[in-house]
Image (cartoon, rainbow, N blue to C red; front, side, top):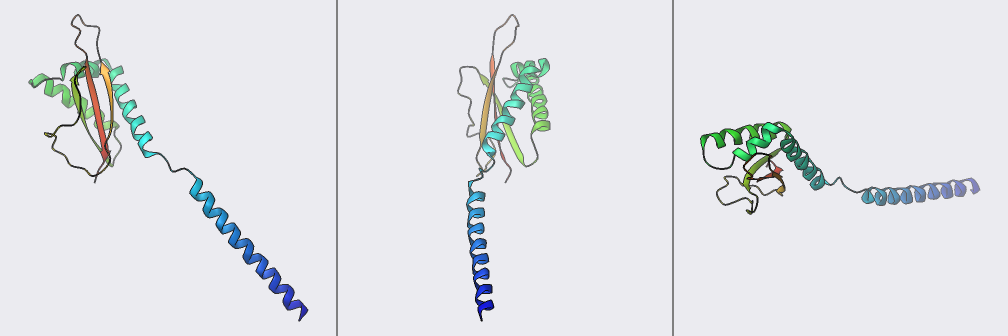
Length: 145
């Protein structure tokens, strides 16, 4: 009889240790911070915009991409293809080129709809040309539905 009581006490202690270890593991896992997707996307946007402003051809394309002319459209196509190469799969984007002092946001004419959060970064672009006409490029990025 005495051997059975000793075994039951050992079993009870083992079960108690399992319960405590399970609770501690659950608390520990909840405390691990989740990867901050927002910061990752904003950092990616900063990298993309920095690569545009550091490349002479793309910087000139931003400066000449404002307006409705055929040349401006070609410049926007060049910028769009460059950004598309850098954006990871599962995300989509729109960029907008504006005057430096203009509010550069998404307008009602943009033909897209998403329920996902939209992340946005901007960068100013200027040149050393004789004519000083800086522009601003704003990049909007979100997860595809």
